Amino acid sequence: MPTTEQISAVLGEIQDPELHRGLNELNMVRNIAIEGSQVTVLIALTIPGCPLKDYFHTVIPAKIKETYTDVSHVEVQLTSMTEDERKALTGNLREDNTAPFARSDSHTQVIAIGSGKGGVGKSTTTVNIAASLSKQGHTVGLLDADVWGFSIPRMLGLHERPTVVGDMIMPPEIFGVKVVSIGLFTGEDNPVVWRGPMLHKALQQFLTDVHWDEPDYLLVDLPPGTGDVSISIAQFLPGAEMVIVTTPQAVAEKVAQRAGFMAEKTGLNVTGVVENMSYFRGDDGKAYDIFGSGGGQALADTLEVPLLGQIPIDPKLRELADVGAPIVLQAPDSEAGQALDRTAKELVNLLPPKPRATKRISLPLIPMTPAGGHQHQHQH
Image (cartoon, rainbow, N blue to C red; front, top):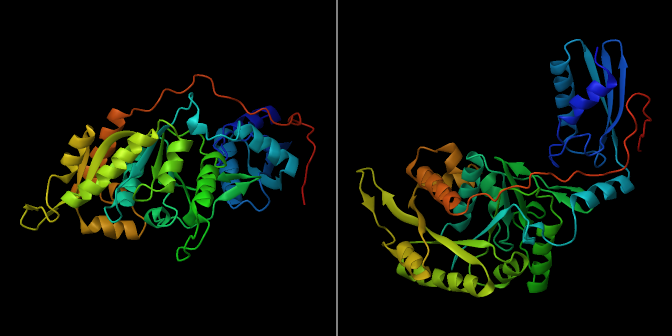
């Protein structure tokens, strides 16, 4: 039979599904008892009634039994952290009140995705690029900064409210993408009637009070145009990159041009252009330029950046977005799916992930009770 130290080592390999840190590192293991072939483990959840408690009841017994076949039964008991312990936890996860992505040593590539006007498929493009980056093996965060016209939750099939630990928001994850949107805190039919200062504060909270955990890429879905949100993002994330989505139409290209010039004036670096709705492939195999042609390339030439991709019109792209299924995952062999995958790969070629620090910062929380004669800390 294993010792308590050996069981503790196994538990240390299990990560909290929201914080992505080992249970020992987060000081969640509070007691280990071994009687014969039975093991009892006491785990302190970050919050009472944690919605992911079933995860611990499933994963911990499976992991221990897989490692030590002599163990016949594993009982997982759950308690919860005290308020002081939660404060210690969130205090160590967040170094200061500034956006972590604004620091010079940040590992994350921040890419804002904007457009000159609505209706060009900016959010659909953003969602699929995020899913494609994750599919390539990158860690990805997605901030829906389109506060008035939020659509990211629906396009990803996300409906759960984020968990809040202390004053830190745990972003829900789907398709390997961590997501935060005002749409996760309000009903889909509720209008968000906010003035500039409230928008500014909300965006600041989404950057500083969310446990993003330094993803390789953070995509920011901007509202169309050149208003308050775009200016705030430029202020919070100086030096961030920007991709502009347009259609082949000449008028759309001219409007998108303003977004590009705004980005340059506010310190955002325009990386490239994506042309959406480039053509429609008929049953006869021919490509029809329904919205004209050349707008994307003309905009790229004006801004002196590359044209990253040309995405065809595909009814399936819209249908899958409406049911929360990115086409790059559900229909990767479709012409639109392949075009979006190529666009994401081109983005990685231009903006490869930044190197990570060789040493990871540990979380020095309150001292753990020594293995063996542990004290039970039940919270009610």
